[in-house]
Amino acid sequence: MDARLIHDHADDMARQILATVRDCLLEHEHREAFEEFYRICKEELEWYERERERMLRRLLRPMNN
Image 1 (cartoon, rainbow, N blue to C red):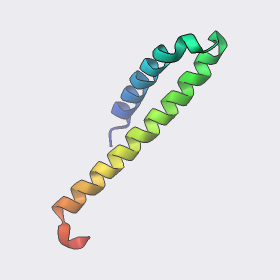
Image 2: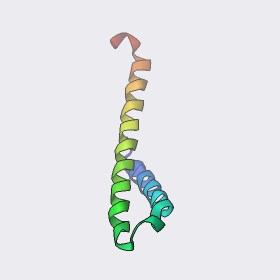
Image 3: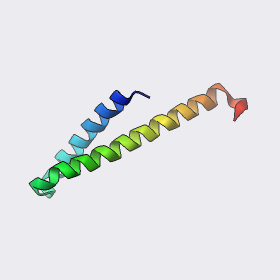
Image 4: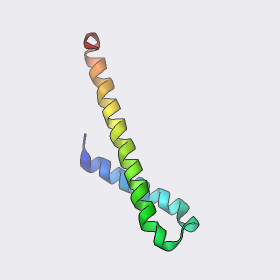
């Protein structure tokens, strides 16, 4: 799992989400919203990576499952 790649993508995704909802938030809420969006995106990308690795292991060693 490439932590830098996950960070970069989570950051980009959080920025895009914030840009979408920015007008619905007060300005002082932007930082907290970004941090929450980033946390969620990062967790989901990490989950996806774990699942991808698990599935690849199962495909490479089907008899060990």
